[in-house]
Structures are given as structure tokens and as C-alpha cells.
Length: 309
Image 1: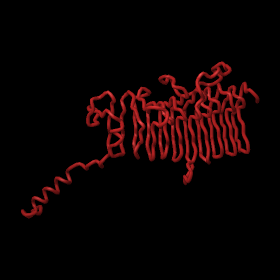
Image 2 (image 1 turned 180 degrees about the horizontal axis):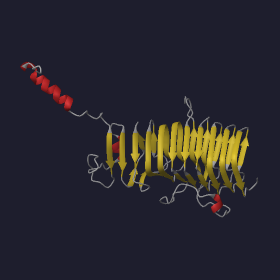
Image 3 (image 1 turned 180 degrees about the vertical axis):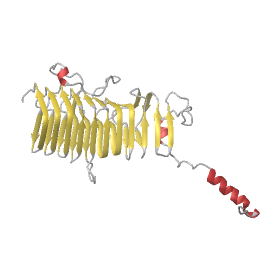
Image 4 (image 1 turned 45 degrees about the horizontal axis):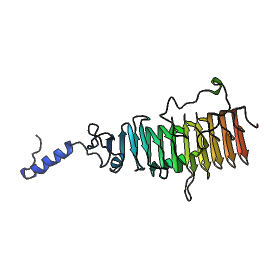
């Protein structure tokens, strides 16, 4: 026979039963938000999205923010744990003028399926950041600056000029499937760098960049620049029309399955670093590879129509 609960304890016993049966509360600030710049402005649900990305980022995190197609004007500082999910290249993050950056991170964050246009820098990385299927276009100083942390990117497109909406895949066509032509005269001013990977002063750990199946197009003076002992790995990367594909000043760089064409400077320039090239094909350029006091490892490297050697 089950034990009876004393009548004076019955109210407390019922309260305890209700508390145990209630589903656990979600931690404050965790959840999903929807943002649509054309909406009237709601509570951030799918049915009633917020109108402002800035308002969404002011909510306590971590957050997963879904962005509808449209233009969103920053600058934006992504709090720790923020994930931005766009609707494709028509979801555009931008900033007025060329003096400010568009997006900055100071912790773990991710961006996916959107475009970043204009600004001094498109993305400034200060933590562990993942970027997938993102277009960087029309920055004044450079598309991405990695001063600390670890950036992993896949399916990225870097366009030096303002251009238009991205078209097609970010993967390179094999060079043997295209007839080579000398680079055409440049009609747009060069951009200093596509991705700058440089350790900040006093940083305890050098930054790391990993790019897969990505493309650089247009007159970048240096598509990827490595400085200050940073580590870079590029896999399945295409460089078209850049002056220098990779400029390395110290640190370690590994390049695998890369195609470089249409530039005027050395395709790969390494100074006092360690450079590894595997399955790399260069068409044109002044030199295929130029090194000075560097350690070079090469396997499956070809250079055609070099201007000097």
C-alpha cells in the first residue's frame, strides 16, 4: 500500500510534481531569429521577423540569425557564438563609405550564404570563424583581415572590383581546358590584398587561415598575404587576374590543387618562410615561383608562358 502524503505537505508535493513534469527552460539568450529588411518589424520569429540586423545582434547570444534577401547596412560586430545564415548572394552586408569595416568578430562566429560589399575591410577576424559560400566584393583595403584566431573558409569568392552578382561555381576549370591569353590591360585600380593573415602585436598564438574551393578574381596586388609567422593552407583555389597569388613573409604556407592565370607579377613569392606547392598550375605571370631565404617543397608544379622564367 503506497505511503500517504501528510495533508499539510500536499500543496508542496503538488508544486514539486509540476516542476518535475515541466520541460526544461532554454538558457536565456539561446535561439533563432529571423530578419527581413522589408518587414514591418516583429518579434524575430519566422512569421514576424525583425527588420534590423543590428537589433538582432543586440540580443543576448549565442544566436542563429536567418537573413532574408536584401541589403543590410552596418558596421556589424558579431557577438560570441553568432551564426549568420543568408539566403544566397542576394543577401548583402555593406557599410556606407570606404572608411569602416563591414563585419568584425571577437570570438567564435560563422557566416554562410551571403555577400559582403564595400567598406575598408569586408571581414576582420578575431576568433575562430567559419565562412561558407560567401562573396567578398569591392573592399577598399582588403576583403578579409585575420589578425588573431582561426579562419576556415569554403566556397568563397573574392572580387577586387565592384562587379555584379556572383555567377557560377567558385571552383576553377582545369587550365588545359582553356586557351591561354595574355592578361588584358587593367581598367580598375588595384586592391592591396584579398586576405591578409598577420599576427597582431603581442598575440600569444599566430593566426591560421584554411581556404578550400575558393576563387580570387580581379586586380589584387596580393590575393593572399602571410606575415608574422602565420600559417596558411589553400586547397582547390583559383586565382585569375591577380598580380601575386600568394605573398609570404615568414610562417608556413601550403598550396594544393591551385590554378593561377592572368597576372603580371610572380605567382608565388616566399621570403624567409616555408612554402609547399602540390599540384599547382601557373599560366603567364612574371615568374611561377620566386623565393629568397625560404624553404621550398614542390610536387606536381607546372608553369607555362612565364614572362621571365
